[in-house]
Length: 548
Image (cartoon, rainbow, N blue to C red; front, top):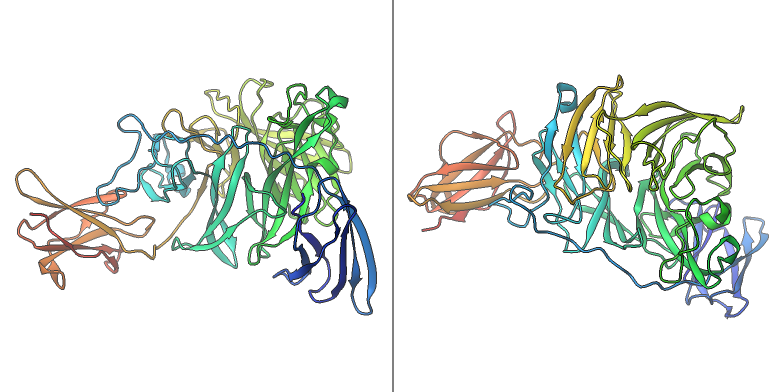
C-alpha cells in the first residue's frame, strides 16, 4: 500500500545503515529507522506515502564489515471502497438479554445451557462475543452453568470477535478484536490485550495503511502478534471471467511488534496463490464489491516454526515458511501438493496445528452446500508421501449447517469444543463422540469463534452495589463484581454513616453474577464485602446511602 513501512529483519538492531528509498514516480523518500523490541531488525518509516503503481527501490548497508543490499517492490492501486457497516440490534424479547440492578450498563445477550455433563462442567468457562444483538455487544465470559462472569460493553455498532486466553510476557491475558464489521465480510478495527485484572495491556493496530481485520489475533510468544487485514486493490479481472475495471481483496496477515506497533512483515495472498485457485466466481466483482477470492480467516504458528494459513475461498490450508513466506505445502483446493482421494473440507475456518503432521479445521461445507452439514475435521498429512487424509470427524447427532464463521478447539481432556459461527450454538463432544454440552445465545445472534478455558481473575475495580426499597419498605442490596472468579459469598455491612459500618447478618452465598441480600430497614448506609471460600475479604464496595 502507499503507506507501507519497510521491514528490515534478520540482523541486530543498529547494524542497518545508509538506507535509501526511492520511488519511480514520487522520488526520494526521507524517513527514520525504528527498532523492533525483539532486537532482530528495524523498520524504515517513510515521512510520506508512495505513489500508486510505482516501483520502490530500497538500498542500504548491513553488518560489520558493512555489506550492501538492494531490492524493489511495487505499490498497489488501492480501491477506497465505501464502508458498509453492519448495525447492532440491541432490542430483544424478555429473557434474551441479561440485566442487573448493580450493573445497569452490563446488558449482554444471555447464554442458555440446554445440555451439560460432569465432564463439561470441569472444562472451564465459555468465552464468546455475540453480535449483532439482542443486548449490548462486547466480549463475554460465562461459567459452565451459563451464568455471566465478565462482560466488556462496547459502543453501539461496535462488535467484538475472537475472545480467548493467550500468553503475553509470560502472563495469561485476554485478547479480542473489536471494531465495525462490513457487509463485505471483514472488519475495520483493532486488537485488544487485557490482563487478568481486566486492565488494558496493549492495543494492536494494523500497519502499512491497513485496518486490522476481525479474523485473526494470535500472540506468538516473542512479543509479536499475527493479525489479518484486507487490502482492496483495483484489478483487471477479465482474464478469469470478471470485468476489466474491477477490484479484488488481497487478504494478508501481518506480524506486529506489540510493544512498538511496528510491522515486522506482511504476507500477501496475491503474491503466493493464483486467482484461478479460487472457488468464488469473479463475474459479479466490481469496484464497489471487490473480488473476495481468498478470504484468509486464520493464521497460527506450528511447532516447527512455520505458519498454518486457512483460505476459505480456495478450500485450502497452506503451510507457510516463516522466514521466506513461500508455501511449503497445500492441503485441499484445486492444486494441492498433498493429495487426497476426495475433498477434505470446503469453505473452512480455523486451521489449528495439533502436532507434527496433524491439524484441525472447522469444515463449514458451504455455501454453496458441499457436504450434508458442518463439522470438525482432523487432518493428517504425509509430506514424504505427498498425501493428506481426514482421520477424525467431530459432529453432533442433530445436523447444523454453519454458512459462515466457526471454530474447533481440542480441550485438554481430549474432548472437542465447537463454535458454530453464524448459527447461535456451541457444543462439546467427547473423544468417543458423545455430546457433553450444548448452549445457545438468542436467535439472531452469532459469534465468529467461541472457546473454553480455565480462568481465574480478580478485577482492579471494586464490587458494584445497588440499593432498593420494596413496596413494604424492606431494604434490599444487590451485589456484583464484574469479572471476579473467586467470590464465594457476600457479607453485608450497614451503619449510621459511611465511615461507621458493621457486619449485618451471616454471609450469603454468591448466586450467579448478581446476588440479592436483605439489609436492615433502618440502615442509613450500606456496603458489601466479597469473600473468598476461606472467608478472606477480597474487596469491599463503596458505601451507598440507603434510599428513603
